[in-house]
Image 1 (cartoon, rainbow, N blue to C red):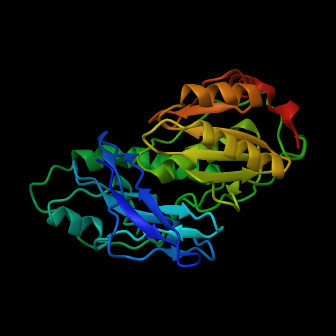
Image 2: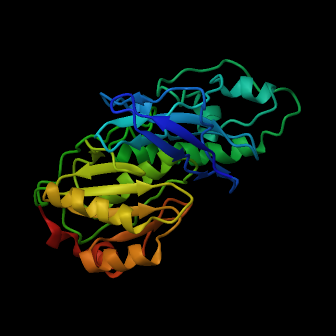
Length: 311
């Protein structure tokens, strides 16, 4: 059951009841960050990518994953970062020795998922441990790095920010022509960071250039932006709500941009109906990282209508 804790705003002293969202682990079990009842919420003054994520261990399979750090918006305008109970962030070898299971990304690359800085643990799993999973994920990991690099992402640090790759000289500015597209190459989704990577790759495949992290964080999920478009990636285990779709559309309207929504678990019926009325393309990300259009605007965009959506 999801944990609920009281959160007091230090600016206006309002008290909120916050329930931690649950996210899907690779094994299928819901994972929620453990909230610190004795901790104090801290206002978010400046955004730092590393601080927006927290390492959480799955209680079912022991796998560590990076998930969005809990936050709550106060009515006074302050965004509060909710305190969580964080355990020691150890490398893959130490996790294996302790009997836990670390994510394939950490085992294969030695990447410190908390800070994005690459470092090798220099330790190996105990003798007799089954290495089949590591061998199976090696090829996928190499392909993921190649695809992240192709999308303008740093393959060693995850999807911090995509670089604006130079556009083809024959393509129009902003959004490239949808004709003669190569097949979309996805990445396997194991964590929320992988969902962001898959969405960034798909936006570039659609023809949007200069994909980067959005300046304004959405109420739920992770925001991406490109020239003339805002995209929201929702890795939560609950379906996206009517409020989620409306907030994205209103934010895009203030920036005179189009908007797209990507969810791992689908959409509520009223959210789909409102998205159809507002013309918001809705996509569902499967675990292979392939976005599937679920409404008419999304189908029109995926079938090659992006040239009509130039900013």
